[in-house]
Image 1 (cartoon, rainbow, N blue to C red):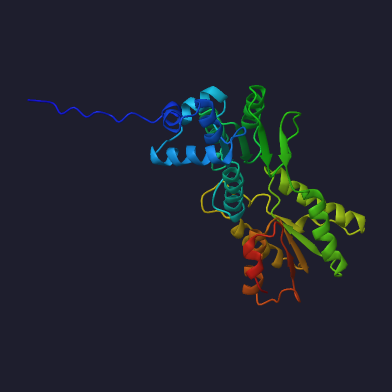
Image 2 (cartoon, rainbow, N blue to C red):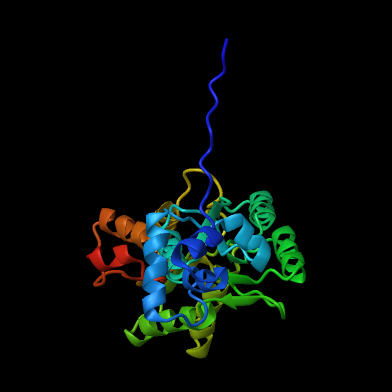
Length: 304
């Protein structure tokens, strides 16, 4: 039985283009890589032949030569909230504008999955890493080892104090203070807080900002008005931040001397809290004022 032999078409090289155009390979390289001066007439001739011969750059060879892969790694804690999707979109747009590729990993807020994502991306020799996950000791230590191997790392959404790692974070302490201050300025003195997660540093800072505002105005801190410590198990499937807000608000409304205003740890928690207020037949903000945090796109469409 005869075997059919298929001859693989030879890939076009810079030398092939240079020979066709009648210029040096370096000139073709300058045009293809957009690096260095080439006259407009010569550039147009080269680009015409590039298109005619269907030339494609060898990405692997180029990466080895330049010791760069033109790829960025992005690790997200989850993809279920608008913040993560907007962040991924913004990073993709910025990367594309600079001709970089983007690899995305989702860790589901698991320390083990964080490390697996870091290992996967660094094994693919990404040029840099953007991390938007919760703090955990093992994952954070791994990030420190990554920068020691000359891979730049940027952490988003939380503080990360390391001389070689940049971070971008909201001022959660001041934000928590300002949110509570706004409610105080409206005349409220019985102000509740929903969503004090012990494992989330940013949310704890929002709680501390709330406490600082109360202390500044000599308003007694009532521990019964702070809910969510036990309820906030966001790592448990089905336990959403909306549910935390809903159940937390129901608990606060059941108090003999219920709060007249609520500071919710984020907008989703506030949405859940608002649902509970409406179910109780109360009005927002006349009976109970509610303020959230984060300014998610959905908040624009929420109405008391």
